[in-house]
Length: 458
Image 1: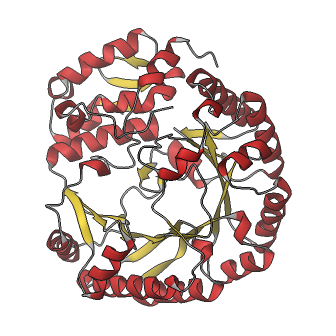
Image 2: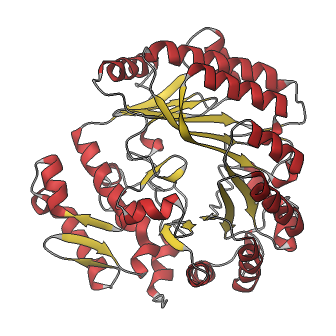
Image 3: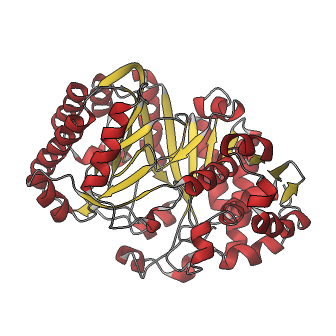
């Protein structure tokens, strides 16, 4: 894969959304509140056919800080905070299920954080039982949990399997010792290898590794060594996220020395090498930062045009409503996005007063849904078919998006996409600029070009 040097100049200054939603969460408004969410749940209950559900529970606690982390988390060794938090989550579940009125099949459950395995096995089991008693899970529902390898062993994995979890996502980040020391996250390769072997033996259906590109002291050589070790374990999926260095927003990142971070050109070379290495090993590039074996459901969904993207990244459930529980969790019901209070105390105070802890959100209009469709087509398939968009939204694509079509010409001239009278299709280098190209269709960025709150695209 030959990456033009010009990419470095574009990516060095480019910032923008990751488009796990459109509009992106920074566009959410405090005008959307509990009443808005209740109305969305009511409208859902009136639908003749119930849209399947995807559930997310945010468990924010961590015992130690990873310096790179930008997640909503509570770093504490005081485990006494957990019971009060779980009581609030259970009460939130009760309020939401009451408003839902009629059950619908749950096809996906994901526990994220923070560190979900901060909780004891007993606490996790109570959470699972609460969810199972409140919702109807499909027989083949995906049940995934994020795991810090430092917090589990074979016995804990066995307990998770007994609870019904069938997918694991291990936070690896990097196997290089110097990098691990610099971000305060020491976990040897042997530990991850042992857990991977145990997970296979216990019958977990899918194993995902999360990595971060752009950490201190990383280079092509160090990343190549990390990938060499990873390929020995052959996880079903890999995600290689871009590190966003925003020390002005995330205080722990101030402990990372900026001079130890790889340059943008080095990051491009690292990403190029990672894509080539993984593809040569049989992995398919799903999009942006995700890779999967050809037999994995993500790879199959992409080939079938059924890939979707939400707040957990790429998924196989394009039509599911998402219900998020816990501090900062985001829900999407129909055309309505809502986000819970992001402060632990504010979240618990609201729920303890039997109020849904909605802090902000967004109700999508028709134009939002149109642009959402176009952006997600780019993010998931790297391709926009004008005719299919016109049929779905009753528009003339080139007329409606005249300004955007003109803006794409420069990317086409540079070889980053193929632009015709009927379609847009990303080229090999276009995938590096996926976020940049998607931003062309973001109406909110055109209204306000202040991009300082976003991470760099690489």
